[in-house]
Length: 409
Image (cartoon, rainbow, N blue to C red; front, side, top):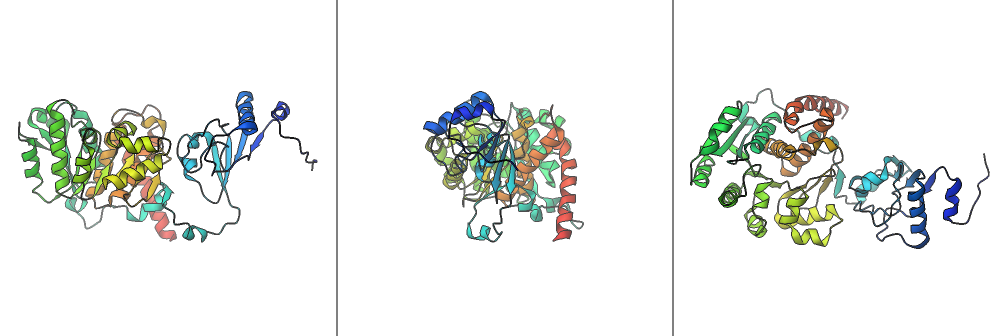
C-alpha cells in the first residue's frame, strides 16, 4: 500500500492528477462557490479532469438540483442511504453522472422518523393499486372517459383518446364540434365520436355529462385558443369541473385561463390533474414561477396547494405533486419523448387510469412512469403515435413484475 501524501490546497495539484475526488461540500450547500473553492472547480472544468463526487458535485444544491454557480460535472457520484431530490432534478441529475447509493449502515427505521414527502417514481410505490382487468369484469367496470376534441387541431385529442383506450379505459368518447365530426369519425374506430352542435357546444357537452357513466373527463389537447375558441374552451373546462368527476386539464385548457387563473382554481372542487409544461406553468402560476425559479419541486408544491389539483409539471424531470404536499420525481423519461403530441398521449394515459377508478395522484404517477418506459422501449425515432401502440408490450412486462412482487410478498 502506498504512502498517503498530504499537500497544500492548490490548483497546481491538477497538473499531475488523473482523478479528482470532489468532497469539498455536501448536498446542503445553498450558495455559490467562492474563493479557492471556486478557483479549484474552474480549474477542474478547464483541464477536464475526471471527477468522482461525494454526495453531490460541489456547487449542486441537493434539495433542488440547481447549479449554484460553477460546477465540475462528475463521471461518478457516490451518495449515502437514499437519493436526494437534487440527484433526480435537473441540472443536478446530469451533473452527477453515474449515481451509486452506498450502504453505510444507516438502519431502514430511520426513514420512519424523517416524515418523507418526496419519492423517486417507481412501481414499488403503486404497483399494488394498478387496475388490472378482472375475469368477472366488463367494459363499464373499466370506466368511460369523455374527451373534448377541438375544431382545427384534431390530431391532439385523437392521440389522447388512443392513449386512454390503450391504458385500459373500457370506453372512450370524443365530443367534438360538428364541423370537425367527419374528420374524427373517419379516423377513429374503437373510440366513439359525439357531435356538439354549432353555437351550443357547452349545452351539448352538459347534456352528454347527464350520463353518469362518463366518470373521467379530459379537456385541453387541441381545444383551441384563437378568438372564440378560447371562450369555448373555458366554458367546456368549467362545465367539466362542475361535475366534480375526475378531470384532466392539459394544454389549451390551462392556457385559456392565463389572464384569470383564479377562475380556474375556484372551479376545481373535485379530483383534478393538471399537466402543464414549463411555458404553460409560467402563464398559469406567474408569481410562483418568479418566487422559486430554480426550485421545480417547491414551485409544483405551491401550484398544487394554490389550485387544489394534482400538478404534473412536465419535463425530463417531471414532478407530480398532490395538494397535500406529497411529491414524486420521475427520472426514467428519455430525450426521445420531446416530440409533438407526446404530452397529449400522457393526458390520455392519465384520464384512462382515472376512468378505471385510480386516485389522481396515483394515476398521474403511473401514467408518467409508463410514458417514460414506453419511450425507452421505442427508442430513437419515436413519434407520438408510437406511444399508445407500444404500451401493451410495456404493460405486459410490468404485469409480470407485479405478479412476481405479489408472490414474494
